[in-house]
Image (cartoon, rainbow, N blue to C red; front, side, top):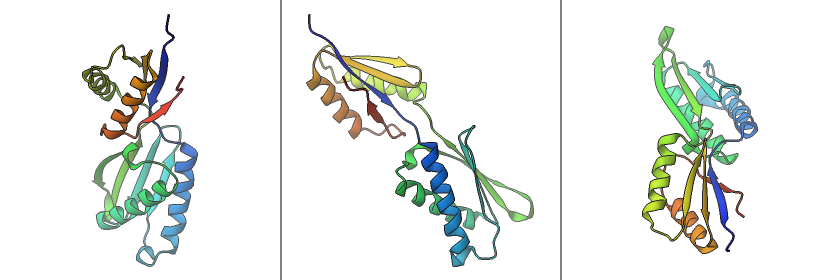
Length: 166
């Protein structure tokens, strides 16, 4: 009997890298000329997995977000894993925005990935949804590599990570 091979598909961000990127963005904001004399704040809530941005107006909030995204990309955190909330107006014309960090694949995306893999019609490829990740099994390693190549080419709104290939 042939043994089955498998791998896991998941997503998530390294909170330590996010913390480092936030600290670098704060330093850059303190040094940049266009932020001199302004009150721009970036706060990271590690337990909730959220970032809170606050600036003097929407223009500076957008610039603040651009600085943060640039630092996140340099630290290896994909901007696909950021769920940007709406820009809220605060008192004195200030603007706020909450950004949620995506940890794990949500059920709708998991179902869509599962359906797309089944639509490939590869022999004996099975997909199991296990909480916030997927396990894909097949007796053929070649089939699993085809699935990985297919998923890398697709856009599911999150940065997919492939692990436990055995």
